[in-house]
Image 1: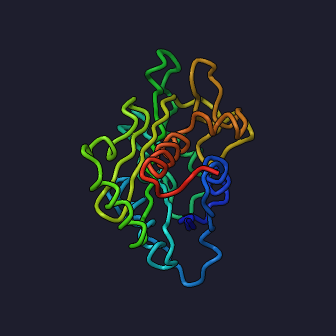
Image 2: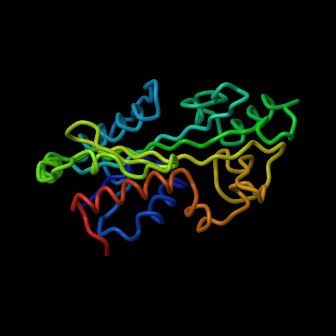
Amino acid sequence: MEIALATRNTDKIREIEAILVSLDVVLVPVDRFEHVPEVVEDGETLEENALKKARAVRDATGLCALSDDTGLEVDVLRGAPGIYSSRYAGDNATYEDNVRKLLQAMQGVPLEPREKRSARFRCVAALALTPPVAVRFQEYLQKQSNAESVMMLGGNGAAAARSTGPDALVAEGILEGRIAEARRGTGGFGYDPVFEIGVSGKTLAEVGLEEKNRISHRYRALVEMRELLLRCSLCRER
């Protein structure tokens, strides 16, 4: 099974490849295809954006297509930057630009209690299915006496996967944390240098890729997607 990766972000591609390495699938970066359109992320939710990108790339490549959309939700900022996370500081914003704007918006917010600077990463992954794969998935569902048990996995509040219509699967992962006062660490990308995790207080940029891929929002979403694919016999483990 070949899956086109509906992203040109090399940092995301590296993480996705590391997380899905156990699946017997071939992951194909979208840059290997010509005439794949740039998708305008104008949805009102992460799910809408992820589905739109995945379906557009599937239609352009003829392969199943995997996309994700991730948002950072900061409670004191009423959920901002949310769906605008990648362009928080403008349409052509760099990682540095977005982090700088976030830290400016958080100035004056105390470190204690911890809840004052609480935030979460939310990742929604979408897999748009080609017609033959969609038929296999629907045939699988028809064989189940309780389709609901297939449609929703997880249940721990951190991740869940489900079918959305006849041609796509959606999975969501959440990572709780808080916003640091300043950048720390040299790893990761995006808001990782200012996103503290757990009681250790380390930022995602202070942990290695292997550790990040065991706990991250993207990991949780993609693991649920992987388990759904395996359960539905749409692919196998290596």
